[in-house]
Each structure stands twice: as structure tokens, then as C-alpha cells.
Amino acid sequence: MKIATWNINGIKARHNTLIAWLKEANPDIACLQEIKSVDENFPREEIESLGYNLETHGQKGFNGVAILSKIPFDEVNRGLPLLEGDEEDPQARFIEGVFTVGNKSLRIACLYLPNGNPVDTEKFPYKLSWMKRLEAWAVERLALEEPLIMAGDYNVIAMPQDCYDVKAWEGDALYRPESRAAFRRLLNLGFTEAFRNTNDADKIYTFWDYQAGAWPKGNGIRIDHLLLSPEATNNLKSVEIDKHTRDWEKPSDHVPIWLEYEEA
Image (cartoon, rainbow, N blue to C red):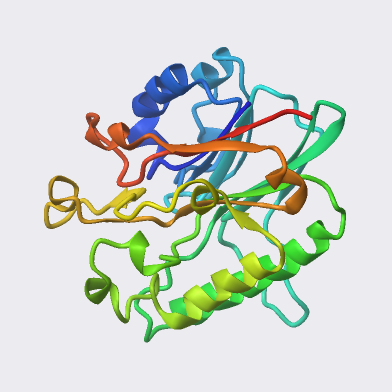
């Protein structure tokens, strides 16, 4: 089965693009980020007509995440749990779905991690605190010892080879040492980063900015990741990036990345 993640940068602007990709790629499960829509206004009909069950966690004009699945949902949870002492977080950045695949549960988290820029504002501490919450959630879920995939836009350039020019990103929240260290702490819990598990090539990206001719110049970064628990890693077959969608009419600045998952 095919499990994908894609920051579509607005469902209203990218609805036709999404439908075209769903018809072409035919993922079994797709995690979407930055839908920029409240739940009741999300355009469900055409997506559901393609055979997808749909769950959203939306927010007007900003953020928002969704999971599309041809497999029925067994469970849905919205919002990343707070840690003790945290203030309420109104930002819609996290949704979790549980599915029955074969004779086992498969848990998928769709996440849109905060950007964190400018770093001299409250946005960077919020990014790091959100990653701390994600780490705490992951520890609890890993204790279940079941297949788990955390899919989404992490807004983290994990390694130098995931960036066209490291110097251009020095000091940026996506490449700050604190962000990269928090990402490594996630991996060190026992997760496998799916793409790097199957491909060690440089200059493979998932995001090209709309500004400064980034796409035609090849000035990209890889910030969309699929992290797998040990139980899920056992079923990982391959990983692909649908780079060609960046060349479509009205493209997102991100492209889909997906993995082939062998059902138990």
C-alpha cells in the first residue's frame, strides 16, 4: 500500500491539483498539511467520490491538517497533547488516525511542525516547545509497540545534504542547531527516517520557494519526512518523491513524498 504526505499550501488554491495527483498517484493514505480551511468548508465531495474517507483538523486561513484514507478509520485524535504547564494551543497542526491493516493496527500521525521564523520572536521558542510535545507524544505511542508512521512537513533541514546551500540557511529556524537536535532526538527514540533509509543521494528535495527562481534554479530543501517506528520499518519497501508536481499549474511549493508499505 502507498502512504503519502504533502503540504498542499491551501486546499482552495490547490483543490484541482490535489484531485489530479490523487487520480495519478492513487495513494491508499495521504496526509495533507497547510489546508488553510475550517473543517466545515473543506471540499470533501470530489475527494470522497474517489473512494477516500476524510478527517480534518482545520483552522481558518492558516495551518490545518487532514488524512485521506481508502481504509476506514478505527480512531481519530485531533491536536497534539499539551505538557504540564503548557498554555492552550489554538493552532491546528496535528491529527492522528488508526487503521486496521492486515491483522494489525497502523497508527499514522499527520503533522505540520511550526516554521519558527523569525528566530528572535516567540515563534522559535514555540517551534521548539511543539517539538518537545511531539517527542513526549511519540514516547507514549512507541510504548504501544505497534506500527506507527509520523508523516508531514517538519520544517527541519535535518542534514547538510538536504539543502542546496547550507550557508543560505544558516541562522534560519529550519536549520538552527536547536531544531536539528530536536529532530535527532526524535530519531534517537527508535524512528527510521524513511527516505534516508532507502536513498543516500544528495540534491533530493521536497520544497522549492516561490521566490527568487528557486524551482528553475534547483534551489530546494528536503523538509517533508516520514518517520517510522521499528514495527513499521519492518514493512517499508521503498520511498519516492513526486517532484514533477512542482511543475504543474498552480503548484504547491512542496511536492508529495510517499512510501510503499507491505501489509502484514
